[in-house]
Amino acid sequence: MAMTQAVQPVIRPATQPTTPARHVTVRGRASFWLFGAAACVALLVLLPLAFTLRQALGFGAANAAELVFRPIVGELALNTLMIVAAATVTSAIVGAAAAWFVERTHLPGRKIWAVLAAAPLAVPPFITSYAWVSFSESLQDFNGALLVVTTAYYPLIYLPVAAALRGMDPALEETARSLGLGPWTRFFRVVLPQLKPALLGGMLLVALGTLSEFGAFALLRFRTFTTEIYAEYRLSFDGSGASMLASILMLLCLVCLALEFRVRGLSRYDRMDRGARRAPARYHLGWGKWPVLASFAGLTLVTLGMPLGMIVYWLLQHGDAAITPVEVSLPLVLDATLSSVGLGLAGAALTTVLALPLGLLLARHPGRIATLLERIVYLAQGLPGIVIALAIVSLAIQALRPLYQSAALLVVAYAILFLPLALVSVRAALLQVEPRLEDAARSLGLNRWQTLWRVVLPLAGPGLGCAAALVFISVMTELTATLLLAPIGTQTLAMQVWADTAALAFAAAAPYAAILVGFSLISTWLLMSLFGKTAVLGATS
Figure 1 (tube, rainbow, N blue to C red):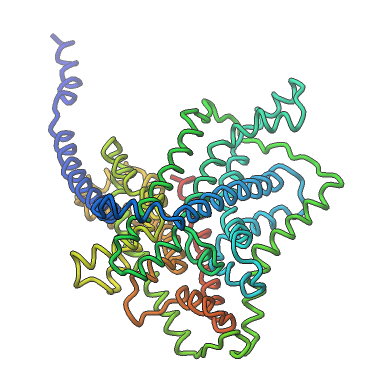
Figure 2: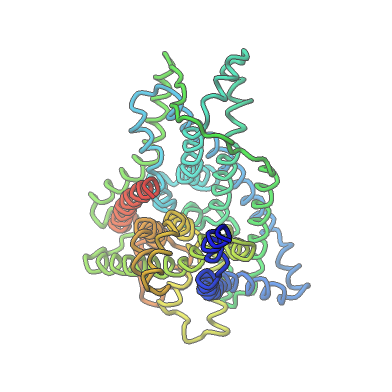
């Protein structure tokens, strides 16, 4: 009897489910609202894509066949496939080689070269094309296009491959060396398979970026699907023919995604035991360091020196130095700067806010539905901006006429285009916030909105700032959607560079290009600073 009385106080609290049940119910209501908000965000992204497909399907079989089977479409397809394949392979070679020499060799000044190798991301491709076109008109067509997109996009491969090399277990190479494998054999049989996810992911980004590139190709007079879609829209203004071509471009993007998934396969590359972190062995270059240094210097000259040098050169020229003089005044430059900054801030704010519910859902309530909504949002990253912008234009004309040619519609287009970029940072930041802190705040009487505002958002602040900075950079340098959706009379820095360069007014475009590159460099520095704070936060959580 005494034993029973002694045991009962221990058993009774475990059988009382009142507090946990109330806790689960509150979380259930919170997840319901999160699911609803996240679903609305996903539908917002899906709407222009579905509208494009509906418009293309309603084009009519005869009209579609007449449009698709024109000789010009075959030429566009050939140009597009050639530039995508060449740019992807060239960027992979340049990016992977740069990452290898920086991370795995005793390269003199490798920390400086590491920064310079990633810096071209701050220079938009159409700014690079402006520099090369103003230097020599002979660098147009395919060769100029390949040069521009390679120098602009190879950091998308360099960065993930460099990160993969830093995180690779040195024991793999040490074991291969103990088995008698030489340096080249170790690289192709041990190192390269470990780099496969990073390399293929970067190549996919380069391929999709090249498919969706418009401004650089338009300035270089290189015709692809993106340039022809824009021309078709400007000629007809009904959007039907352009939507048909946009559907073909969407199909090419989906083919790229399928190929990347097929090549990558379902292989796993994670380690069961991380063990002690050790620095990998670095190779001595010997006399080979001189050609490697010369290659890095040449790469920096082409990717950074040429664009920045030509901008400075044209800034020092008078207005009549442009082949087609265009008057440049301080009010015009100031108006374009204010418009770009205003749209950038508005786009960054709206995109970050829209990414919050889906980020919270993925961080706190992961599951099949959350993953499906995430994949829908990522569709925007895999499709060209001109396709989404054209769909929004047609949708506004047919169903949302009051919003047509409004700044609000342009900001919504920015949010749809760059939501995947914000979601990556927002989700990572929210995952670093310890859920027990939210439970403690709720136990102190705070409701879910107060907990979100006073606990979650301050802790995730650096990551949210990182997302906003990334979107701000993208909006400032965005060209396609801005050309199609900007209200009449609105001029941004990117639009001015494009218009003046198209008119061969290189000196007139220089001030806008200089300000745009300056904002990109400052935003990139801010982005890296916030990324560093996020990393510190994750390490201390």
